[in-house]
Amino acid sequence: MKKKPYADIPGTTVFDSTQARKGYHLNQFFMSLMKPENRERFLAGEKAYLDEWSLSEEMKQAVMKRDYNEIIKLGGNVYFFGKLFFTDKKSFEQGAGSMTGMKPEEYRAMMISGGRKPTHPSTLKGKN
Amino acid sequence: MAKITAGVATSHVPAIGAAVDLGKTGEDYWKPLFKGYEFSKKWIAEEKPDVVVLVYNDHATAFDMNIIPTFALGCGEEFGIADEGWGRRPVPNVMGHPDLAWHIAHSVIDDEFDITIVNKMEVDHGLSVPMTLMFGQPDAWPCKVIPLAVNVITFPPPSGKRCFALGQAIRRAVDSYEEDLNVQIWGTGGMSHQLQGPRAGLINSEFDQDFLDRFLNDPVELAKTPHIDYLEQAGAEGVELVMWHVMRGALNEKVTELHRHYHVPASNTAVGHVIYKNS
Image (cartoon, rainbow over all chains, first blue to last red; front, side, top):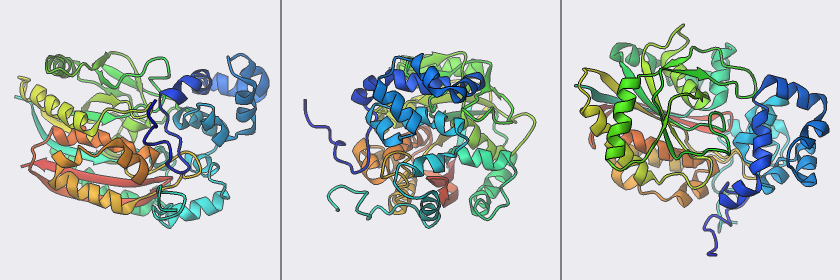
């Protein structure tokens, strides 16, 4: 298969057919957190709740660790795992920031000062 | 006859809805953002649209990984407000306009846009935040809404060119509807932002400003922007901007820009907002 034109954008995983197929069950699990009773049940016993879904052990570990970069690698999509930010009473800013390796206050300060610049080495391919 | 009189484009960040719902709009962080919508609220109170065709994307709310329609038109009587994980937003349900919606569906399918027809779905911040920004906090929304959900989550979304052409088909559909109705088309989402991975937080004001200029003056060429340009330059989630092209396609090529607002940040996102009048 031809190389995907978006494969080498730094720090970015495009949620395409490969990722969507890999993460089907994982994303459906996140979807279940839209119901308040499921959020409660999940928080009361994460492992037991995760065991009800067809997830690999590494997927379960990534969820329990809230390792969102790993979750992305395993096929998770941000709008689905965003439900977990909210289940944890975290904002989208805190959730997104957690994937950058920055401290929450550093990330917030970067956003207030105009965001991650397109000229920053972490942004445009071929510019670093 | 029904007529599309104006278009509104705006970002639809969930934190904006939360700021309104929790009474935080006067905080220093939020003040400049909401200031840019003061004109818009006054303007729309005078315009009094009967119906808004509201182009937005569903954020894993009504559509999960089981069903992923590229274009889905809400043809029902009423649309509930979803609980997206933090409880339902305290905003009224959205009332549809089934007669016009079904007419649009019929017309655009005849026009070779094989859209999905939806009778029942809940809508999320993608739709409710633009409503709040334009109408504030009324007990009931002052107009009917026809939701048009576009898939921008599972790659690839429809091309900008296809979105623009769908806008043109919607225009033909509305123009052929017999009842006198003041119809607006809204395009939502964007502008530059990335919510995922180590590159989260990307904002490209230069890209956004150029987009706003060309959206007004060179819409046909702008709609040809390939997805890779959005992904690379406007962030992975910046590709939401394709939805603006649906709105632009439904308007005249020459429009009058009544208002423009741009602010960084709302949460992780560059907020853009324009109002165009068909001239």
